[in-house]
Amino acid sequence: MLGDRQGSVAHRAVAAWVVALVVVGFFYVTDSRRMAAGEEELGRVQSEQRRFSALIAQKRKAEVLRDSLIIRAHRHPQHRRRALRVGPHLRRDQSRPADYTWLTGVEPLAAVKAPSGPPAAAAAAPADTGSAAGGVKFAIEGRTSDIQALHSLPAAAHHVALDHQHHRGSDDDGDRAEPPGDGLQPYGDLPPGRLDVRSDGPSAADAALGKPHGPF
Amino acid sequence: MALSEKDKKQVTGLVAFLALAGAGLFIYFIHMPNAAKLAVTRRQIDSLTVQVDSARAISPGEAWRTSGSG
Image 1 (cartoon, rainbow over the protein chains, first blue to last red):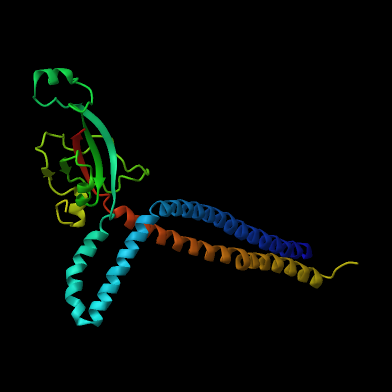
Image 2 (image 1 turned 180 degrees about the vertical axis):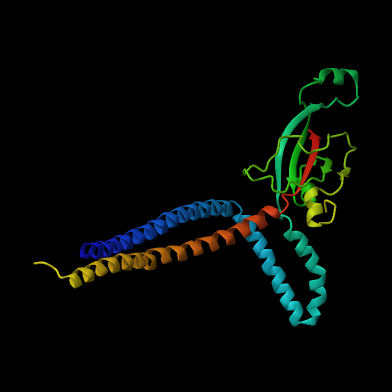
């Protein structure tokens, strides 16, 4: 009888230790896993944030400007009209990376025929090389947030065909450039100085976001 | 020296108390700071994710194509 009571008390002590060790082990294992997963995710998000830091800073700057404008408009009625005038432009500018124009490809097309002239001069000019008489025709592909920036291109690049294509979320792998010709309309011969804007309708991303259709 | 029955019960109770107290101390000094740190990390992740998603939502612009000769 006495031995049974002693054994029961000892069992309770052992059970307390077992419970304590189980609880400690459970918390230790789960904490370690969650901390490791959280730190790994934090590192991944921080690396992405570093990639987009310039864009985020630009967006924040635009937001600060917009907010200060709105505050001024509320404080001073004379600024309200100006804010109403500027606000939509700010919101539009916020939705795009300002001052971004970059090239995605340059490819030679064909040699330009020499201008008609005296037969001797035409015969002297080579037909398939980039000389002063003939020259090389080339195509440049790129992306821009501001179509006006295209006017700063060299005068030789005076044929512009614009294909209104947005590629949201396509840069998950960090590669924003696309293969040449992907998503672009085939280039056609346009008269010099003509700006041709082609638009086949709003993209799915634009439609989902309710953005107005149009490249400008 | 033989312990009396009462002493044995007290010793056993003390051992059990030490086990539970150790578990409590572990939870208070290890688990709770870890949980707080994890909450801070989670808030940082959420904040950075919002920033990255807003940056990703910005359109990379329109594709354009031009040509010339020279």
